[in-house]
Image (cartoon, rainbow, N blue to C red; front, side):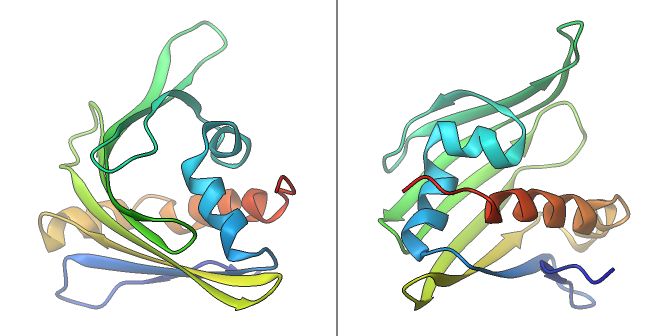
Length: 153
């Protein structure tokens, strides 16, 4: 099965480019990344904290049914331009991965179609390649498939 979310990793570069077109307006794709109730719907994480403002912080978490934290990520939002773009730091706690810098751009293709482009910059090529050895492409594709089903305006 072809993945609709494209993950592009050029040899020797410490970045990933991620691209996905959605049958959703750009405003909704932006909201899906910046409104806690929507983030929880498609990412599958609980939003512990989310300050939608420049220099605002966020914390996402996933727990097991027994209440054990399985995944926790945090960071800071920067350069928020409503319905167009933002930048965030992204730290996966207790994983051995260093902090990433993520640039999000959302382009309107038509009234109900948009394109998301993410540039993720890693500390090193080795760190990027370590992430690519995990089922990262499949995971982000699954999350984006859930994002495609969001209907809240």
